[in-house]
Image (cartoon, rainbow, N blue to C red; front, side, top):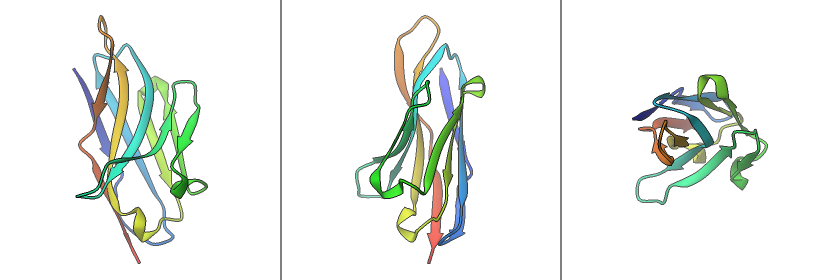
Length: 120
């Protein structure tokens, strides 16, 4: 079994910064893509940023130039540095990882989410 635990959410004023972290633990052989998604209640969950095991990154257009995703493969941890935050970034942010456990194939795992609130 694999667990993803997010941290780093909170309340910040517009223009401020936050850094989210997500640590994967459990029976992990390899992690392929790790990413961050966000979802406002009643809306579809959207990909914010993703990073491959080799370091290739992908961002939704609305956060390009403001957010940076990174990962520490040795710690099975992914980060999301969020700068120049806007009220419209307010959301619950979910960590996602494509994990291969020992003796098994790749499976998709999700964290429970961390709330980011940006005040105007």
